[in-house]
Amino acid sequence: MKNECAKKRPVDNPYEIWMSPDGTWEWRVLKKYQTPANEAKNKYAIWFTACKSPNTYGSWEYGDAYVRDIKSTARRES
Image 1 (cartoon, rainbow, N blue to C red):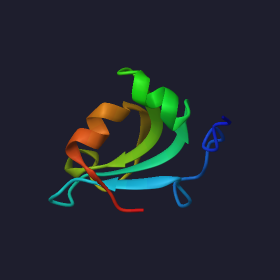
Image 2: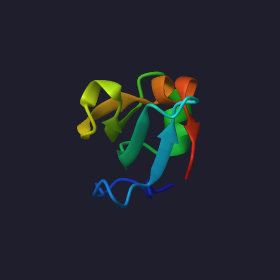
Image 3: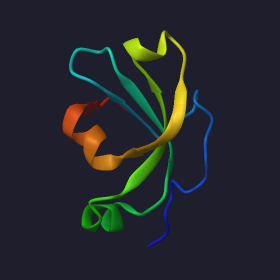
Image 4: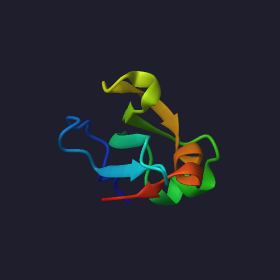
């Protein structure tokens, strides 16, 4: 199976958007390094994301984030 999310996208056109329940944190998934099947088997799977939170003062911070951390604290918006 081919990874359909392997190419990096700009922040205004992410693969997925994840939001915290209170809406203060937002992660935009810009690249996935593995297929969903492989991510499910890897507890250290990561996504390249842009994140906005109260700690970033309205700007985006870019970097890798653990998939399990995002999925355990946020819900998928798109």
